[in-house]
Each structure stands twice: as structure tokens, then as C-alpha cells.
Image (tube, rainbow, N blue to C red; front, side, top):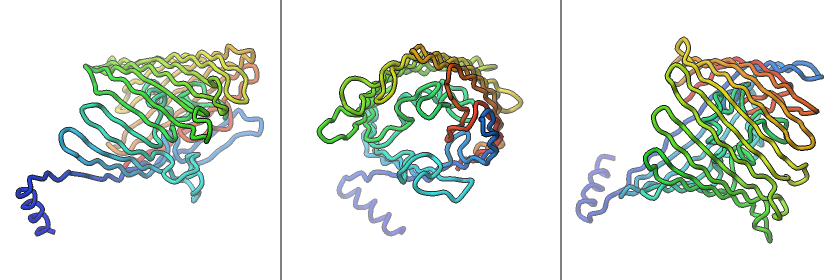
Length: 347
């Protein structure tokens, strides 16, 4: 081992070749919670949930320094059930593929960053910051009814067959673009997604505006357009969250959508942890008028840099036949209100 290192160093001096430095990191998360759902005509659901604040996972990420400011990297990440022996095909995440949480390759340099593969959408990455609950716990802004969400992140939190480009940071400003192929033979526009984002991050301020357009399954016309804008401001004693979202379009096989959603929330440092609260007004302006309001409260307390305990409660008031449910980071939920208490360990 030592002689090989010496030989490589000598060869480098003789040839003038710089050998790239690379590293691979194994990481993960185990999240378990007691969840009590109510508000379903069938009665309560009491269960142990894996991935209440965020999905339990195992991942691998690597980076190689190519020199001259350029780097190549990758992320491979799969979910798993920490509460049972359930495995493929869902791994407790809803994905039907191994390494289905993330699987992408990256190239970065002075030009910015390019990624290709299965990766988080720009809309999701923006929503994670704007939502005090970071799309987890009972109070998640992404709680839905199986067909839609109170606050939409994109056609899904992750995009298959996608390309993403992020510009360098210019004084706190940066922009991103994404393109996901539907890969339908003979119709390359079918189920195609395009999106863009503009951000500012500086001191206590975060601002993010995202747009995405999803072509329908026939590749003719637009199925959905979503514009989301919002920000956070950290006053020290409280961080304020605000979001406004407009959804329009006609998804394949569904009625025309016209929804305006507003979110207001806070993160408050309290007794060594953080108290969380948010209110969401989902205003369905279509002929169905299936509106809803959600309020949620929670508390997260770190036991160490890697481990935290938490609790949360949320309630949804549905109107005119809306059936939104209070779920969490990985589950749809079963009723219009839910309580959870759990622990998460990162490694």
C-alpha cells in the first residue's frame, strides 16, 4: 500500500500528471414515529410509521476533483421500511425502483452545475425551504388527496429522465432550469416537463420563485402550469415563512384546475429546539370549488447533531367534497387530522 503510493507520486513527478482526488460517502436516515389518524368514517388508524418527518433511506454519494475547478459526482439513494420487513417494490417510499429516491450524475465547475438522472424537482427544493415543516410531519404543505396536493411541488417530488442546470452564484442570486423527458416513442412531447427557478439567498433572507409546465400524456396542449413564489426571513427570535401558488391547466382525464394557495408559517427557537406552525388556505376556483384549510403545529428537539425527537399535529377542514388527508413525509394518511411523535437519526 505504502510502496504503491510512493510509486504513484514518483510517476506524477516524472510525467507531470495530476491524479484526481475522489471520495465516496455512505449516509442515511432512520425515522420512526407513532402516528394516530382520525376523521375517517372507518375509524382511527394507529400505527408505527417509517419516514414521518422524512423518508428513511440509505445513500451513496461521491465526488471526484478533476482539477481546474471542475468536479464530477453522483448520488444513489434508496428508501427502506424501518418499521417492518417490507421491501421491493415500494421500500416504504412509493418508488417502484431500486435506488428510486435519487440516482443522478453531476458535473460542476465555473459554469455552474449540471445533473442528469432521477432527481428532486426545483419546485420541491423550493417548497422544502418555504414550508416550516419541510414537507414532513403531520403539518406538511404537500398533504393531498391522492390526486393532488394542498401545495404542489411539481408532477412529483422527483423527476425521471431529467436534466438540471444551476448557474453560479452572483451576489446571492442564482437561477436554475430543468427538463424531464416523457420518453414516449413517436411523441417526444408527451408527459414532458420543463421548469425554471430564480433564487436569492443572503443573510437572513431566502426568496424563491419557481415555474413548471407539464405536457399531458397525449403531448398536445398543456396539462398543468404552476407558479410558486415565496420567501423566509429570520429575525433571530422567529423565522417567518410565506408562500403563494397559482395552479392552472387540465390534467389528462381530469377537470380543469384553477387553484390559488396561500401559506403562512413560523419557526421559533424554543427551549433548545424549534417550534413549528403553519396555516394553508387552498382556494379551488374551478366549478368544483373543492377548497380546504390546514393548520399544523409541531416541535423538534435535537438530542445531538445527528439525532432529534419531534411531535406534530395537523387538521384539515375540507369543503364541497374535498378529501384532503393529513399525511406526513412518506404517507398519504387516512383522515383529516393526525398526531405523531417520533425520533430521527442521521448517519
